[in-house]
Amino acid sequence: MAEGERLRSVRVPGVTLTVRSRPPVREGRPPAFYVHGLGGSSLNWSPLMALLEDAVDSEAVDLPGFGDSPPPDDGDYSITAHARAVIRCLEASDRGPVHLFGNSLGGAVATRVAAVRPDLVRTLTLVSPALPELRVQRSAVPTGLLAVPGVAPLFTRLTREWTAEQRVRGVMNLCYGDPSRVAPEGFRHAVQEMERRQRLPYFWDAMARSARGLVSSYMLGGQHGLWRQAERVLAPTLLVYGGRDQLVGFRMAQRAARHFRGSRLVTLPDAGHVAMMEYPETVASAFRELLRDATGPADEGDTVQPDAEGDPGPSADTGGPTATIETTRG
Image 1 (cartoon, rainbow, N blue to C red):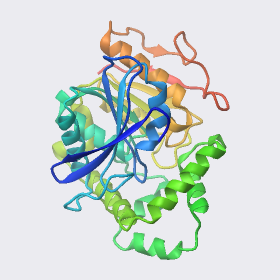
Image 2: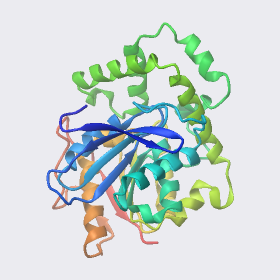
Image 3: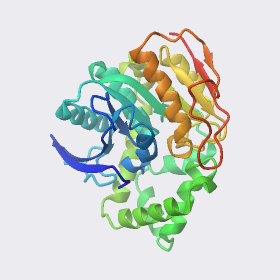
Image 4: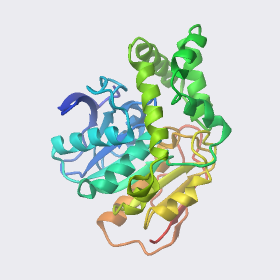
């Protein structure tokens, strides 16, 4: 755990969830809740949670079968099941409507939660949400193949000689726009976490079933389709897309902006799939603007430049990205 974080277990019907929290520096801050992507964990949100500790009361969940959460009792890893787990966790905490965040798979889950339970969501922030794409980019195909029955065990056999370091480098090359931004200490912690996960007997099963659940959600039509549910979201929405994302097509940014009414779109040309880890300062700044607009007078401007007054400046590591922030009205 990062300094200042806490872990607790929450038992809700059908599943036990591990929740990572970072109490705010001042009492009375509004609650925020974070949902990670496929193969990730609540740790993915630690950099952003630290930057927002003065603004929100943060909690991040380990979805069933990921991080420190055990598998669900019924073995259901569908988007609907993950959304149900998030809803039950929010209901159990009784923290009122939250500022909901989601990345990748977690973005699809958060979209469904916001659509079906608007009473639980104050604002919605999606970082590279895994929403249906008809033309999937080639670099995302191997991840999608995990959904095919038998592929995960085959991949396990073919890569049994790979070290944890090799696996982590592969993941970072896939998920980061610039893997060199990862500090040596961060890489070392990621290797330790990979070694721990590989010892879990359900690790690949959770990965494969969650991938299958995501792909299956793409096939749903009507009111259950994710794009249709995006149109039903009432909460003010922030969309963050990376120009070097190898898993979610950058071209999906404009489509998402059209479907989420009144959304604000932030595009980061140098970011990959996990902008909240690569450029947490920029994502935090964009969320603060969303927070101000959602709790104060409406922002009448259509476009906000990234270096406008109120932006905290470039990333502390190697310099922040050139970002474009647009507000669309639905």
